[in-house]
Length: 115
Length: 116
Image (cartoon, rainbow over all chains, first blue to last red; front, top):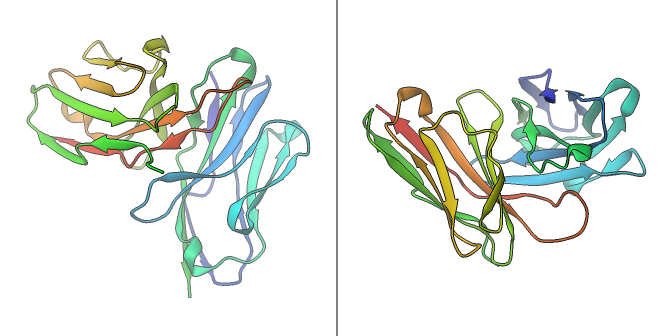
């Protein structure tokens, strides 16, 4: 069964700092990869996704993620964070070649951006 | 348009009681998922519906947990004889029909269950 590791549980940054959140998964087959975000008091919403093609994917609000297959990684990046990026971020994987639809989530990273 | 809705938003119950949690998916979405999130942990998959059928119920933790979906729409997750370890936020998601192996999952606000 696949698993997802998010190495940073709590990250504190100042506005305008650069962000990189780590995500590693354990599955040797074909995967779909996702980053979801949960802003305070709001639902989980999709930030970006990778299915195939260009391994550098761009999402909403200036976020991007790079799929590195050899490292089983899908790290999330943003060059300059804003206070409004304060949220919890979840990496998720779907094992595409199993035909299963379930997502396996990491435990999340809480990002706190200080003004 | 309306998103995924769940009710109740909060439920406090006593150990040993049964509870029912409801999910209304986005209209037209054929796939429906239940997850739960325990304190400090990521989301854990419970069950997946395609229409009214549940081809994947591998995440249900015990036979105290069951779910059904009627009319290809509303779903109910039932937990019998609740235990304190069932305390968690139960999230529902839905996704639209389409080709390919996967479609984006749209999440509801969740039901926070507390078992005393």
